[in-house]
Every structure is written in structure tokens, then in C-alpha cells.
Amino acid sequence: MSTTLEPNSPFDPEFCHNEREVESKLLVSYLLPILGYPPYLWHQQVQQNRFRLDFVANASHTLDAPSVVLEAKHPRTNLSHHIRQLREYMLADATVKYGLLTNGKEIRIYERKNDSIELVFQCFGHGIEKKLDEIRQLIGRQELSEELPKSITTPGTEQGVENKEGVTMMEQVISKQVEETRKTMKTIAIYHNKGGVGKTTVSVNLAAALRNKGQRVLLVDIDSQANSTFATGLIKFQFEEDDSIIKSYVLHILSSGDYDFIPEVVRPSDNFNHPEIDVIPSHINLIESQEKLNKIGASRSRLLMKLNRVKDSYDFVIIDTPPARDLYSEIALITADYLIIPSDLKPFANQGLANVKNFLKQANEFRETMMGRTPLTVLGVLASKISTNAQFLKHTFPRQKSAVSKHYDLPLLDTVIYERTSLSKCVSHTKKEGELEIPDPQSIFEFCKIESAADQAAEEFDLLAAEVLKQTS
Image 1 (tube, rainbow, N blue to C red):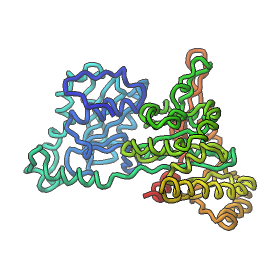
Image 2 (cartoon, rainbow, N blue to C red):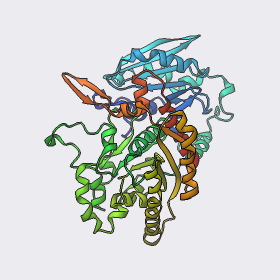
Image 3 (cartoon, one colour):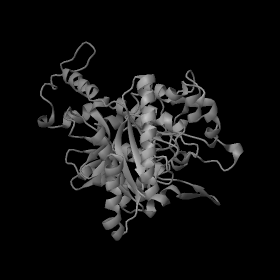
Image 4 (cartoon, one colour):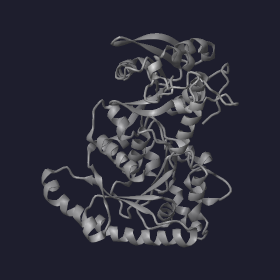
């Protein structure tokens, strides 16, 4: 996260290339601090009634009474297309008085007026520092708190009893509560040694679903096929000489203990999901380095070591693995805290579960003897790419599921990911640039927005994220 700018420093929207950067550079690092909202009085990706909001800010210390809704959009987005959405957000909660809508290039503020909203402020991103006083008068924390009824302020805060640093006692209490409830980073490997069972689909869409629930997510692609790298929009080049990944990808994380740390290699996914997720990309050349890395014992622990250095930056790390019992899969199992095993539950996939268990045992031995780590926790086998045929679901599917626990003694996750056309279409989504059709892969959630349709696959991944959050809490 960039350093907070001084109140009169210029904000340059040209440095915002996607929605994530509008959020971090304009809202989190610039406007919210300037408007007087400390981190414990604003929240990101909040589920409010039936809506998921980018940000809510609270002028009082009552954290469930938001005063301002802030929505960030991609810099190329026409804000007028999102007024209706903002109006629904604001009218859904009686405590919300103002809504800020921005794409970085333009900032709009709307005020709630009875059963509608009214545009009360508008300016460009360039030159916003000259408009800060006007913005403060509308949505500044101090200005808004003076308008709030006393009934929704926390007793004792009106007196503003401060310590020598100028922090009220209530702020100290809330800050301490936030710090105490901060979650430990959890790392989940997505692994099965059989290909074609939906590992990448699960990896990228679970990452998106967790991000949509307000979690800070890092996706690590450690498969030389680089499917997750492609699926998150990072492979933009058409020709070898334009390869933008080969100089910095997951291999560099594994090759050295002294260089190439996570912040130097990580990239934001490109228009894959809003909000975006962070990605450690892979490359086809990864396969060539396996023999060399295999001879270096330290290579097995480097990913874990480097992830530990950013443990305060992420809530979840998702690792997409190769469909093989190789070094890279072993590194994933050594590094992870949890394991999800996607499987279409067909005969070869089910029979492969015995191999998965043996490989897991090998990784756990390394964890215990070489690293002093506890065994990997298996969250469960995830039924994925499951046919929606009614007769299959009635007769065959129950027998396939029972085999997982009966023959292989593995837990089965409650969520089922069915085989749906939208899941293949979202990865193969393209967009026009001039005369060219270029790849523009989307998460299932973004694809549904583009197609303006609700989709059961999105609901399934939302359920999966909820199940993962519950099991890892």
C-alpha cells in the first residue's frame, strides 16, 4: 500500500490502471485519511443487506452504522452506468447519508434525498487537492459526526478524552479489538495428481470469491502449464519476444533465498475480478528448472519462508499445483496449511485419491522431520465438474461420493461445483481492441456481471468460499 499523501499533494489518476489501484491509491491512501477516517472506521468489501459494498466509512464509533458508501470503478468505466446501483446501495440502509462514486478520473458525491439520491458534488481526479475543503464539508468525518444524532454515538467519545498522542480512549479500545481479531494468513493448496478435474477453475474462482468477501488474497501459480496465470489475465503477449513474465515469476521465488521476494514478483490480476487479486505468475519454462531445484534442499522451503515475510499482507494464499507427484506439488504441500482435493469423482480420479494420500504422507514427513511443522489439514475432496443430469445425480453421484469416505477415508466438502458452460466461457472471454480479438478472462463473478445474468456457478463458488471461511476460522 502506498504512503498516504499530504492533504495538498497532487493525486494523479494516470497511475490508476485498474479498479484495485483506484481503491488503494485514491481511496485508501489519499481520501479516507484526509477526510479523517482511521482504518478502524472504514471497512472494505462489506456485505450490507443484499449488497456487497466496496467501502463503508463511519463518522461515529458505531461500526454498524455507516455514514458514507464509497464505490470504486475501473478507470475506463462510465460512472453514469452505476448511479442506479449506488442508489440501491444507499437506500438499502437508513444510516447512509452520502455515496461517493469514482473511477479515479472523476469523483462524484451523491446525497440521499427521501427516496432518491441527488448529485451534490463533482470534480476531476486531476486537481482534486483544490477541492478537498468542499469534499470535507460533505463527507468529512468531523463534519458528519456533528450532524449525527447523539443516540448513535458511543458514550464517552463526545468528551474526546485523549492520551498524549491525541487518541481517544474509545479509539484505543477499538484499535486494540481490530488488532486482536486480525486473522492469521491461511495457505490452501489445490491439488490432485489427475488432470482435468478443475484445479485451476477452483483455484482462481475460490480466490475471487474470498476476495469478494473482503479477504486479502494471493494466488500462487506453481504449475508450468500456467493456467491460473492465463486465467487471471496476465498473459497478454502474442509473441515470444514480447513475453512479459519470463524475467519474474514463481521460479525466481524458489531459486534464491536472498533475492526475489513476494512484493518484487507479485502482480495484480488484470481485469479478472473486481476487486482484483494478487498473483505470483508461472511460466512454461518452469518445467526446465525442476531437476536443478530438486538438488537444492532449501528450494522446498523457500516459498514458505517468503510467504512468512508477507503474512500481515494477506488473509489467504491459494496455490494452484501441477497434476503430478513432482517437486512443485511437493513444495505446495509443504508450504500449505490446508488442502482441497478437486475431483470429478470418476473412477480414475477416485482411484487417484490413494496416490494423493501417499504423496501427502511423504510431504507430512518432510514437514515434521525437516521443518517441525504439523501435518497438513485436509479440508476435503471437492466434487467438481459434476454433471447436472438428473439420472446421474440420483443414481451414480451418491455412490461416487460414498466411495471417497468409505474406500479412501477422506472428508468430502459440502459444496459441489457442477459442470456449467459459464465456467468455460469466463476463461475464454475476449474483447475487441481495434481489429483484434484479445483474451480477456474473467472470474465467474465478473463474467456474470458482463452477461447481466445470475449464474448458479457463481453461487456455488460463493458457497465454497463460505465453507472455507468456516472451516479455517
